[in-house]
Length: 336
Image: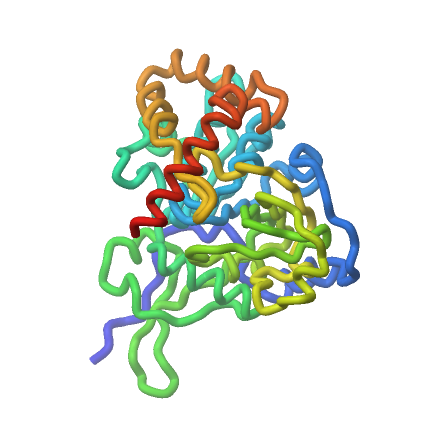
């Protein structure tokens, strides 16, 4: 006998209705238009207070750090966030939840946040979550990926087997359903249509066509699920290169609203085949967060007190430090 169908106790932060999302997608231009933008203008024009935000990459791999810093500098408020394989990106966004700077995050779909993998837990991100000022709904990493897949497909949900019989289901906003073919019980995972997403890639053209190497995780689905999409890239390349080898185009131009050329844009995270993560700087973040006063001074120096991401890089050692990280990535790639 089947157990009764059930619903998780969590709040659903994003409407899964594909017809509502379709109205936003219909407004996207389909022409090959020049979408180059500064990071500041992309954040100003495409990320609004109360938006639901999703960030691409995996852990500290290929994260759009420049966009995240600019969100703090422009003091965007009350954002929702998809905490899918989120590490340093979530850590930085939580830095906006400081007294005197408002509330960058107000609600989070949690799968993997607070932890920076083997590096340890973010003391400040933990303070933010434990404060009770941010609403949280729980999922697994796989569940959030399926939610993005549903949105990319243009449906309101997809069935899955994950989370059945767990406390994660209890604290999620999922529902159980009965299969019309086998009568088995599955979890119905609601589609996730972020208002805006930011993804860092290796190469893009001025129209938004994008290439990336290494693990893609859910970024290809995210690019198609987000109502607005900002691409940051290590380098802009001619459109003819995309036309010559279209099979390498993983994110097509019609998904993209802005393209920002940001060399070293994943720093202090790593970029596969480009540069390794700055482990010294990531450890510094974790250490300074232990003291809220010291952390506030740290943020003033590295984010609020700099003009843009390039100035932040200069304060962290500039081209000399990046060349060291490039050499480290090359050596690891050559011996793997």
